[in-house]
Amino acid sequence: MGNKITNICCIGAGYVGGPTMAVIAAKCPHIKVTIVDLNVARIAAWNDENLDNLPVYEPGLAEIVSQARGRNLFFTTEVEKAIDEAQMIFISVNTPTKTYGLGKGKAADLKYIELCARQIAAVSKNDKIVVEKSTLPVRTAEAVRSILDNTGNGVKFQILSNPEFLAEGTAVEDLLSPDRVLIGGDTDEEGQAAIKALADVYAEWIPRERILTTNVWSSELSKLTANAFLAQRVSSINAMSELCEKTGADVNEVARAIGMDSRIGPKFLKASVGFGGSCFQKDILNLVYIAKSYGLNEVADYWEQVVIMNDHQKVRFAAKIVKTLYNTVSGKKIAFLGWAFKKDTNDTRESAAIQVADELLYEQANIAVFDPKVEEDKIQADLNYLDTRTKEENAKLATAFQDPYEACKDAHAIAVLTEWDEFKEYDWQRIYDNMKKPAFVFDGRAILDGKKLTDIGFVFHVIGK
Ligand code: NAD
Ligand code: UGA
Image 1 (cartoon, protein in one colour):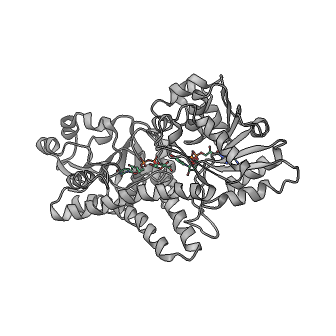
Image 2 (cartoon, helix red, strand yellow; image 1 turned 135 degrees about the vertical axis):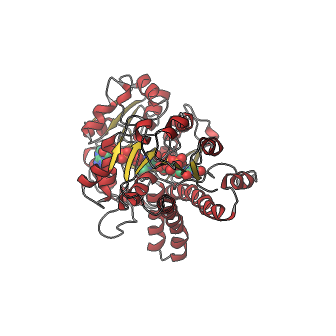
Image 3 (cartoon, helix red, strand yellow; image 1 turned 30 degrees about the vertical axis):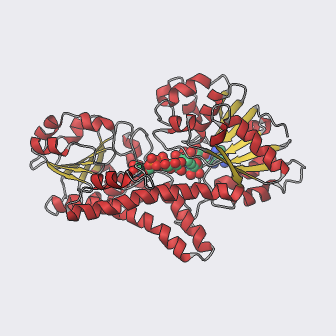
């Protein structure tokens, strides 16, 4: 196996595959990087002349893509050709929670991973390094190896685990300057050579001391552990937010006070309407499933509580709106500012907004959504996916607006679901003038100036106060 990598293939052109490979290509002009996907529309969008149409919105991504696309960065649906030509293949496909069979609702669905492994096995004619970029249950590399080693064609594979730690909204920044890059591989000579080959790619722009190497199992488990710890901090501060609301304490002040303890640290202590995103819940449930499968029930229960707390936070936010609006929202217009699971992304997977909307739709509210980066069809698809009412009912009760002032016009209440910066800059007097009175604001992200809004005349409620 040649040590210097000059040809990389990545299977999966999603939120991870796209940005990650674009940065590798931009930083390593000597490496040809080909990203493949079965989704024809997604590949077409990555190839779109108009960079506003890229399938993933991330600050700075369009610039990086335009720098490398067509030079040494290619997006294609020709999966087999790209696998055949590559020395190193990243698997970056989705690993959602299983929706059927054993482990339904908890375990990771590894069917896409297995399909990739089988395709790599079928196509490869020379030795390759296969890199797990997707987030996977600990010991998945064993299954991948078993598929790859049974091809009978003499091709040798090295399997590395290289989990991705980028956060959406800051993906490019995180990729250009990560806290660390983690590479897990076999401890024998060939495993170490494979680790070195991948480390050399990252070393083109990342200081060596930030490139951490471990065995495969530690690497796989570290990814689940990192997400579990991060999500746990959010659930911990959210648990405190409820207690703050009862006691007169202010969760922002509490977060600041504890965050100045260097052992705790100030980051990831922002109380919210609940964490969303494609990974926190999925990865914790996966961890819970793994722990249970080893009979570690206390470990499983401990982590499951993080998700239980998060669900509670979303439900109680919706319940507070209903209760405050005199116990009925039936036929009332409630404006949602934000639908994405966090600011600076167009991703809505597991967004708290979806569950809050669902709770309010049960109560027959009319939901008017404005999100700077999310379109109507996405919002409807998210609601329809819940399968709690018909498509027609969702379309009738929930509407997307292109203009925030229109979304808020004649509303009884506004709920802030995403922390987009622009919400702070709106003409709140104008919004107030056009709303039903009393005009309520429920700030699920604690981003608005409560004093200013109260002075205008709003009845203002904020999480954690
Ligand atoms: P995604 O759904 O955005 O992208 C996955 C892509 O893989 C899809 O476009 C799909 O069409 C494609 N795909 C699936 N099977 C395929 C196959 N056999 N051949 C070719 N293409 C195939 O998912 P994502 O958000 O990029 O996440 C990918 C992995 O990375 C997951 O395991 C996730 O847990 C992990 N991860 C995600 C993030 C994040 O911020 N989204 C961060 C770190 C890790
Ligand atoms: C998270 C991790 O931060 C990444 O390191 C990881 O790679 C990624 O998951 C993954 O594996 O997919 P991401 O979900 O993109 O990244 O975004 P985060 O910034 O972690 O936010 C997740 C959710 O928690 C958002 O809904 C956010 O609003 C919420 N959050 C975050 C809070 O409510 N409070 C906080 O203090 C921080």
